[in-house]
Image 1 (cartoon, rainbow, N blue to C red):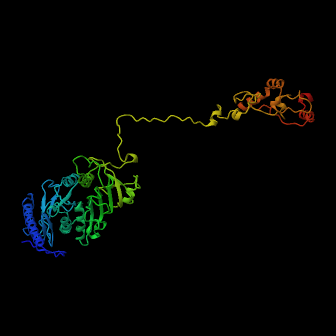
Image 2 (image 1 turned 180 degrees about the vertical axis):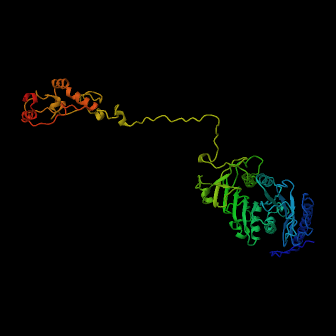
Image 3 (image 1 turned 30 degrees about the vertical axis):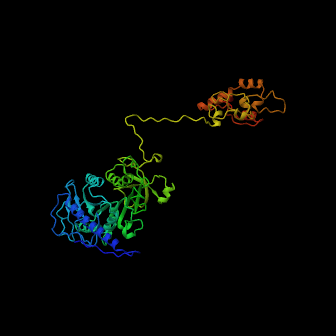
Length: 514
């Protein structure tokens, strides 16, 4: 017989009729709860299991049952309402039922397909669901396709049916204690590589798993859109927070409705803003339920995605609402392959249909929209046409890269000699002291005037200069061929001493002496 805890209420106008009605309602709900429990036990699916010890406990008589809702009171583990199922690559389809007890001798973990050399994934469903939810089952498929894992599902559907959300929240403490007992048996197998994955209310349940483990801290907890109702004002010991594991990562997809808006872990990723997901507003689709379950679908895709889900940092959700968190090039990955050093709040974008991952973008305006890449055709580069700008100095450069004489409107002054370096008369000289080379060019000048400028010569003088370049041509030829002519390079002499030099330099010959 079930015992109901009696509660005393103070009323302003107590009456016998009201008390009688309350008693009848409690009796009817008690009968309905018994029939619901018996039907659920009979309808449990048959599974391929290993040998399970016969020592099991029955539901405690102190439970409070109202209709389909059950508040667990004073139960101990193991509990028949909480089941554990194991999948490995040796049994990817046929699950093994694990019996977890107080000691390893009473448990059947050692005779199952559990292998301590591989990482263990413990997956916990949420309210009004079970382990057979499609997106949760695809997690097993993706993991076993990726590598060797021990995939353990926690099925506590009997203690979390709809519409009994309040009783399901109450039962998370008891379920967390039983899952902690499972973790203890896994530790006795010689492995500490354990990853707890909780969806919705199952994410909040992971908090009680960590609280019942004593000194051991779980390496990682992943919260998939942790439940919000009744957890807004909850304390640290009653909700998922960063102190529950070495690393806690969270994916938010339906905040303000079924999921929490506040941060719950070391790294919180708000997908598409974290409230409503693209593609969930189709006709005939529950937008809240669709957005809530997208958290599992995103995480499931991240297990083997080549692109991955990448987010950029944001200081707070209020900063995001005020448009102060634009996308940046500093991106960090979310999902299965997240780095355990990731810290902070992040925003990420996804597609509206599967595959949802956009990858790591480099073009910020497109937010990861991959541009089509054509292959097989040659790469051509089109240079932009030259601009109309031109350096004004370049317009006045001649063929020898010199500024033209008409630059800045300077009038051209003709010169008697050509400017071409290949011409005959390209060297200017004054004529002073060069009478031996040029001849008597200045003989016709008036007395007292020295005509030392080529520009001041008359046309007749120019003809004389052109008629007497004999020595000048000889001088240029000597410079080119390396021959020195004494007629040009003469020894300087003093006027008046020429005759004495000739006389002293002449010696008599022998025939003259004789």
